[in-house]
Length: 260
Length: 295
Image 1 (spheres, rainbow over the protein chains, first blue to last red):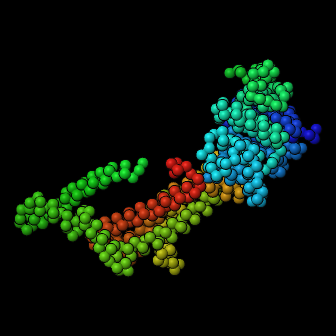
Image 2 (image 1 turned 60 degrees about the vertical axis):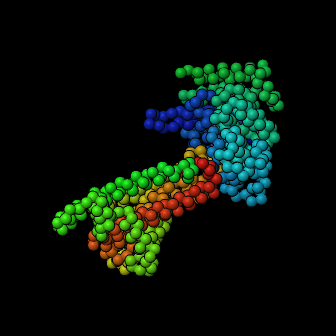
Image 3 (image 1 turned 90 degrees about the vertical axis):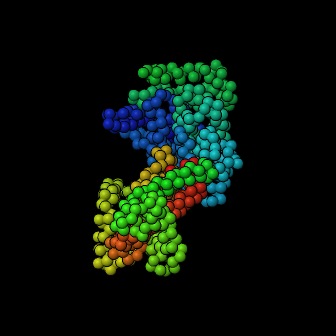
């Protein structure tokens, strides 16, 4: 299984809080293959974001094993193996869009010429050419999030970790960005791990949907999508799409995600 | 809001203050005039009383025009090298203020960087920083002057150090808050790039702290001036605005006291304005939204 970009084996993470231990992740077994688009879906507290943060080495697991590109997450992080897109765009307000996108390149010590070239290329990829000199506040929420995706793409990591990147945006913008994200994925053939609250979003985007449930956070179902790689927005009214969405909903129900 | 919209309210407030002031001048200086008239055995009329209260040599409360006249005499008419020139005294105080402000800002920033990056410093230094400000400056200023004098330091530096003592505090507090102001996501982002702590500092913490720094600097420059004035008191009224205040009070020269006070207030206002201009300039360079409010 050397092809796996992410592989977790009996992974658990427990946070010690004042109200006692919280089992954010419990016995997670999962693998993400190269070039896959994997969505993590589940209610709040199911550990989907925590799992993403474990991959990114922003949290340490309590027990179990996890490999990113075949090595420990820390090593992978130091090798700059992934780009991370946060829920909020988290652009630095004192930097223009091009300097925000160039931030990781500056830190990683790219030459000025290379930096310029990569900024231009990634901004074109997310359709933000012409906005180089703008400051974040001059852009709409959707454009800001696209800039933050460009920032994550700038240094060409093969793995893209996205934590509810479109959660704060309205549905019209979200549809549009979903479509663009699929195009981008097709163009760059990256592996994407995508955390979401939205069933249609998960089904529309993914090649694999990981349904998670809370208390303790665990994987309750893994659904392989049968949708074709080419996905116009209208595909969401097809019977196939509805069937997968139904199965996701069933998975959530089986994990008691709808219980109060 | 534009300047035109502010002019009328500001003028209204100022004229109300001036009216109250002159009423107080008549009221507070009147007993002296009644006394004088009684001793001379004459009856004093109201209009005579009012005009007399505004032209006393050593009034309890000088009238505004007396202060303005005194300030004009001592700022504009006197040669600036004269010991009676307020420009001369003002410069003495200003130089101590600026030196103290610079040392205080530097010290404050260095301490804040240490506190933010070192847990031991966070636990050990911060309580001392706060404790330092609970000691009345009037109590500690003579000690500083005396101790430094004993080791051969006198003149500008001891006064500047009293300014430093006051001005480093808002800078430490503001910068600790400022350097800690980046949110989790912004810090996590740096971590995902495996940025070094120096990179995280210069590319994230430092720029994030700028609004906090300048807000602190506005307070620091004003209290630096207070520190310099206080530092001039125990030296025996040699020179500086503090010396003018002290000499004025020795000899009951109320007009001199008030004009020194006003000069100090105007100086403080100008200094704060200069820091304010630097504040807007830096934040503008950092791409702040034009109508965004400065923190």
